[in-house]
Image 1: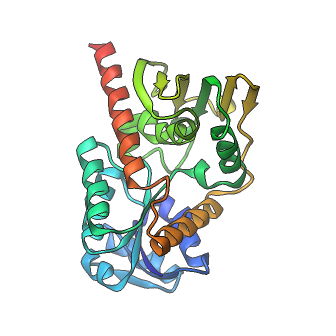
Image 2: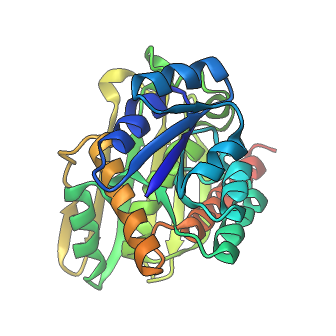
Length: 295
């Protein structure tokens, strides 16, 4: 499968480009970016073609991987799907339900495969744990936290305008939901939502299987306080999601495996654009609840 990369920022350079270049089932064909000079530099690094016209790239590939801000990703994903290209997308799928729905509908209408890169879903130990817990009934509550230090360190992602505007809810919320929903079922209601220091948010969620969960998200904690964790409690006791031993490049390689499998079989992957849409709907509901609480 020939695949092109849309995006040249820190995430594209650190994760997407090396994953695409190193995948044995992919031919990394080229790079397009909003800054032509950055696209040329990244393309040169991997000895692939730089594109100044995104439609020219789409004409030369079977699939695209997108490492762009969500508001840019969504319309380009629609464009790629309409051109018949399979989609390896990043989270969140979009920053509005309408944009996310446009991507999901375009992929469905075009009959193209789509995979949204929710990191834990493609890391060996978390993926296995999620599958094991999803097969067990009787969970009554869950607790999740993802406390990052993007805004309190010299992280290259701190300058991201969409992260500055949307904060941890939209940056880290997709990760939390991608872990909780396969186990506890769809979120039926955002029961409560509140702000903490910086961009910290706290959510209380009801799930279709009858359980509830609490979620704390932040990208502004002190570095010493950073960390992630997922805990389930129910009929079988308590279980905690194990830490991942694999880095983002390895996880993205697994996501590319999933895209190849979905394209080859025609069977949707659980983390396809329709799931990305559902995550966006829940994030939008949580954002509305947070806004209502501050009025």
